[in-house]
Length: 359
Image 1 (cartoon, rainbow, N blue to C red):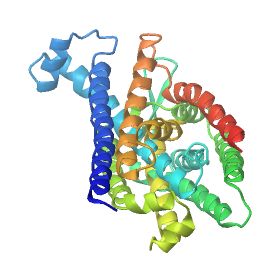
Image 2: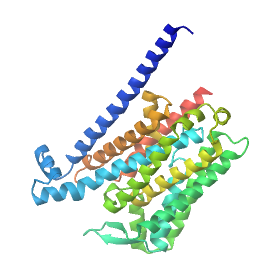
Image 3: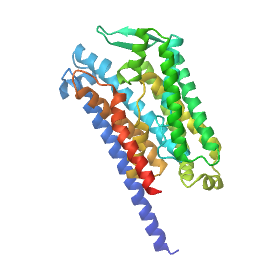
């Protein structure tokens, strides 16, 4: 090749990288804007100046309480859980070679929900708190036990899915259908446990399964954040391996990628962060499915940028969903799990039809 050709290739690569950085910076700006919008949303009706004063600790005691004890935990939970669910969906779609894979479609969230329900009802890891009316809320008294049980439920589902993926002749579509069957099995198990619980605990666990960012305190958020940071470090460290796996497992093996090891460890890490998120905020569906597909439209399948961009996109989607939950019927706060399901189900059907039209 001539020197001129090398120069053109280098310039084309620089433009390619520049576009990816623009998308990443734009995603960060959207996250900041969504955070500010979430801070200003609520029945208290705080102005921008009052919000700024409350954040820096200069406002009144009431404003500081609203900001740091009510809104900030919700925002932090939305960001961290959105990052965790989006990252898990992004990596699952890569290692399983299935664009429909995510914690919710493969039954990982439902398995984790079953494990958390076992911990709360059978092992007394949660207590019921009356909020002054007919509604009840759940307070997790032993977050480590709930996390462990949720992880066991999620990893059980993951092992079943991986076992099916290793069977010769099983298609990627069949894996998703198996995930639906596994979801039904764990949902039935959760219902069976509730059948033997008392009425108050049943109502409490049902309310918990709706999904709510408001129940996560700073301790729970810290646990999810620590695990999500470690998971991000692991995923980003293997970004080049994921890029190689996009060309197929045989190509990745020829390039020295430990495909089997990376598949199992990646799925275990995905199950861990998705299970912990479910344990503390309930089932929030389709974030892990939607976010990777949105960012692939802008950065492609380059996992150097797809992983961080997808993580930020998941945080933005969950923040916007939480804003909608609080703003649609004020002062009532709608369950965020229901809203994300309403938004995610049509996209899921669209992806299924798109895959069918491509065959």
